[in-house]
Image (cartoon, rainbow, N blue to C red; front, side):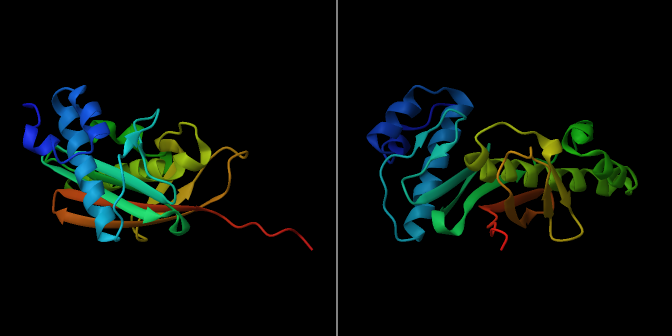
Length: 205
């Protein structure tokens, strides 16, 4: 929780560095780590961009033509970057060794909760954690299209079918196509990656 070292802050753009110095504790660490991860991901695409600023929901505002998502824990920051043509991306990292089953009723829809409760005790938290991670990533990927908050109940995750996502958004929202992918970093930590696109609707003949 100590301030980010000056040598690390110096790797940020001047605009990012000015924002980071106004943050404290964990927020400063997460901000700096996330920006460095996003820049590394962009460079892997052959792109070198300017400052990655923050939106009203604290979301990273990628440059025109790109979508960016960041996730972080105390010891790790990961960013996902893609071109807009490939859809809007979301990423979330979950797992710190604690089984927090008390959040199951918040994270899970009723049908998901029934499934979790039927599992052996040692499998319950991993099932909830996967849903938590995927739904957080879904929010990050879909929010730019709908521009309003939606909670965990707006999505269900089929953990038996590649973390397939079903959305339950208001009828006035655009119809979305969502793809998801999981990567287990270790047995207690999972990374969820999501890509969202508007579904193409063809007019009736």
